Length: 98
Image 1 (cartoon, rainbow, N blue to C red):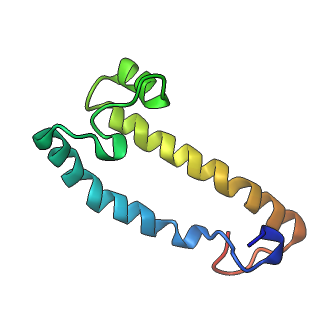
Image 2 (image 1 turned 90 degrees about the horizontal axis):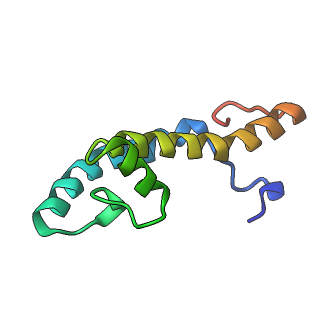
């Protein structure tokens, strides 16, 4: 559904849901990856040439996960910023939305 339709509206008030999900799911997956030598969610290593590979080189393992979280927050910000700007200019900032 296109954004101009107005049926799907990104909402900052719902952003806590994926954050809580990740906070609950990521720690066990990290340790299960270590135990079974897997790499779900790319928590234990990044693929060559990916931004995670750069983070691992700079921060080391497992500390790159802090950079991974920062990268996620930056991406969320960049995804929500255009919608916030458009709504601000149109004067359509409604309760419960950005």
